[in-house]
Length: 379
Image (tube, rainbow, N blue to C red; front, side):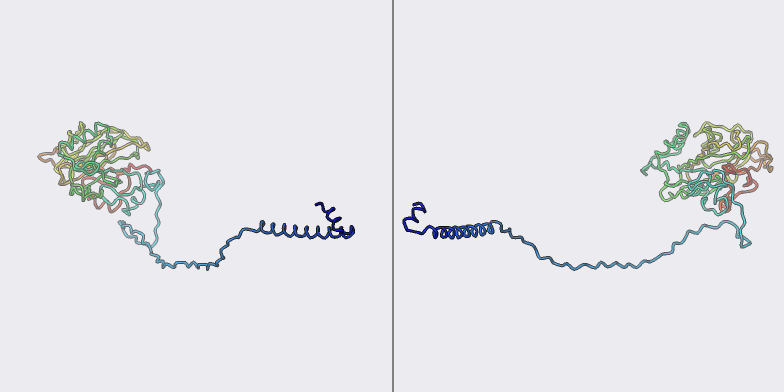
């Protein structure tokens, strides 16, 4: 029934009915508003958040580890003194002129410390471990072992064949590098070795405990510079092998007579060869070919030393300049040697010889002299 008809049927007064309607409408509106607010409150409720309680962590205190430090005083190596003790408390010497000498530690003039007599580098007759100038550099090979140290069958004949092959290959190190090579090299100013045990060479190169003292060879290389323009020749003798090559040409084979001609085809054309006995050996001095050298012009030099059957080893390498005046001595004739007047020649050297090394050379002044030209650059 429509509200209007209902009101008329109940006899409601018109003025009051309007108030009643307004009241009812307000209540309905309030009711609806309250319901809407409740619904929205429920729908908009935030999801619960789970936050852990913050725990204050104690800060760790880092302590420095205190290690006791011991400072050791390093002692510097003491060099063997081979010079005579000075008579005064002050030293006054002139440093040698810088001459472009080639060495592992830079350029030093005049042969470096070795020439001053301290004997620092030249600790053996085959050379020293360090370079202080323009020395010859030697490499030691044992032909009885392969490059890896395996045994190699070797005899005198095969030894000579290998060295001859080396010569014919223009002295290429590749031929010798197939055999055992000592780790260290030696730097030498001269090659004067009195008669001694052949074990001295392996010992000098630090391999005496693994190399039997026979069928070994040393290949020296370097450059020399003549102090004066002129004609020169080498002379001397090696027990067993001494061969000299200048600018890729063999100029002397002064090997022991039993092996001479079996390694090279070189023959001495000097009339003096065969006349005079060499030092304390039952062999004659061999004189090499004359060669012309120009002052200040470096030339390549190679020297081969070797021991074949073992036993004793010796070597002497001297130099002679044409036109120079040398001390003369008379050598008596023997059953083997003609004898006659012989020049006392200087040893071939590339720098001043340290005092300690001079003693080891045991120079006989009647046979050779330490006084003479120096073939190292810068002198």
